[in-house]
Length: 269
Image (cartoon, rainbow, N blue to C red):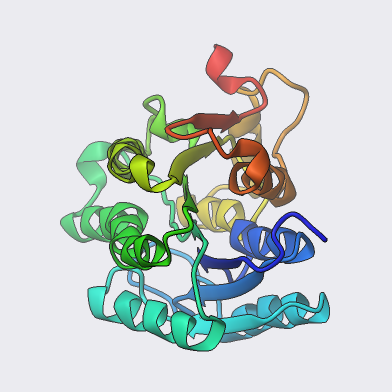
C-alpha cells in the first residue's frame, strides 16, 4: 500500500508547473486525480497560460502511473464552472479527499500602473478561485464524514510586501486569511487546511513574467535569487509537491493552519 491509496485529489491549475507536479506526486502515492485548468489565455497576465494539450499531458502521465485521472476544463473564477467540475469529479471518481488550490497567475507593475482590469483578474484567479474551490469541495468532504486535506498555494509574497507585485501580494495575503478562517471552521470535522509559501519556482510562470516585464529571464531570476539565503536561484516544482504530499498524508493529520515556507530561507531576512 502507498500513502494515499483510495484517495481522490482535486487540483486546480493542474495542466503544467506546480499543478502537474502535485498531480504526479500524489498519483505516485496512490491517489486518483481530478486535474482542472482553464486551458485558454486571459486578457491578463501578459503571457500565455496552459493549453488543453498541457492538461491532457498531465492526465496521460497520471494514467501511466496506473491511477485514474479526470481532465476538467474550467475557469476558477466561475462558480458555475467549479460547481460543475466538482459534480463531474464525484460522478467519475466517487469522492474528493484532497483539495489543492494551485491555479494562479503573476505579473509585475507598480501599484499606480496596475489597471482595474489587471487588479480584478489577479484577485479573481488567485483568491476568489480558491474560495470557490473550497465552497464546492468542502460540502462534499463533510458529507463523506471521513475528514479531508486542503492545501492553498500562497507565496513568500503572502508573507511580505514586494515591489511591483502589490496586486499579487494582496491576493496571496488574502489566501492566508481565507485558509486560517476555513481551518477553524472545519477542524471539528477532521479536515485540515494549510498554506504553502514558495520562493521563486522554476516554471513557465517565471518565463512569462520576464516576457511581460520586457526583461531577460536571467535578470528576473537574479532579482529573485538575491532574497534566498540558500544557494539556489529557483527551486523546483517537485520541492513544493513534496511538501504538499506530507501535508495531505496521515503523517500530518494534526497539522492545520500552518504556513509552510519552502523559501530557501528567504523569510529569515
